[in-house]
Length: 132
Image 1 (cartoon, rainbow, N blue to C red):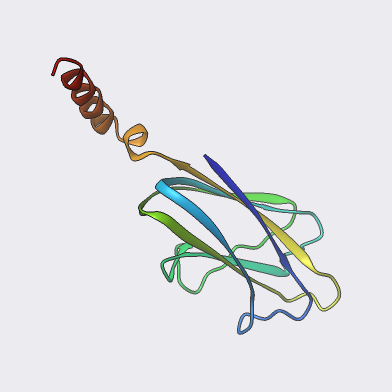
Image 2 (cartoon, helix red, strand yellow; image 1 turned 120 degrees about the vertical axis):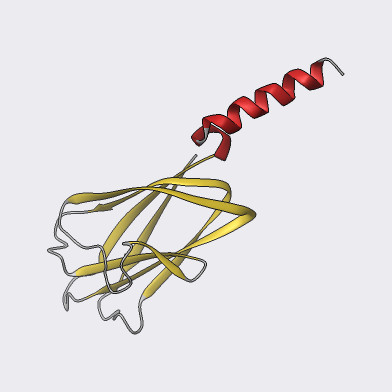
């Protein structure tokens, strides 16, 4: 599954008072996060991504994602064990003239696909159920 969310950040949004938005994600494992940063950002807009109140991208607490006309990608294994999980996007804008936008894409798969041993276990259980 691929979840996509655009975070628009108006002029005047600061780190102390950022633009925020959320993505509701169903049970599974986050295996990838890609952030597209359109042209004209010039490194002036910043983004942090949170789950459960903890920053997950970038990993360092005082870091942020920024750039210009690029995609920042990360590989993860974040187990989302609730039926509905909330990812929070938080961004601010140091540009005093133009608003900016980040496009966040989050890849989620079932745990058994990412862990082959679980897939084998599920197949064995399925076969056992056939012969009951």
